[in-house]
Length: 158
Image 1 (cartoon, rainbow, N blue to C red):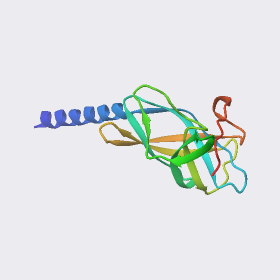
Image 2 (tube, rainbow, N blue to C red):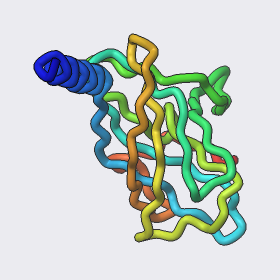
Image 3 (cartoon, rainbow, N blue to C red):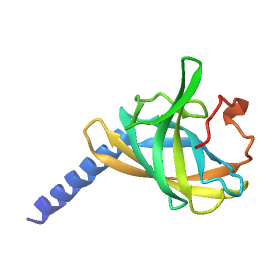
Image 4 (cartoon, rainbow, N blue to C red):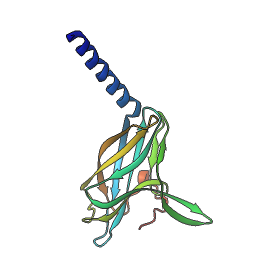
């Protein structure tokens, strides 16, 4: 009986570890653009790499009333921004959330985002199997003029 319990616990532990490994995501260079005093929205940017196929499906932050995943793109020479349901994270391929592309939009900010501070984010990642996990991120607030790797692609302000 005791052997059966130990075997069951070991199987459960291996299954849990296996499920985690299947959707594990690393986050690099997470940052948020600083805001002006009355500005109520800003963007968060980072590079995500999933160990196996997954999707970024949601984000939250105690610093904002609303957090959405957005995409900016130019259509007919006009920069447009819209909320999206998810961002695909192909296995082993870095996906850059950057100004002018996919990014996390923080709206209804509770306080200005000041350079040098950090903002907590919780990303919800969904694996190919539909299981979800949360990834905690601390994003450094950078100057209003900051851009990912020195290239600002026309990020629109809300």
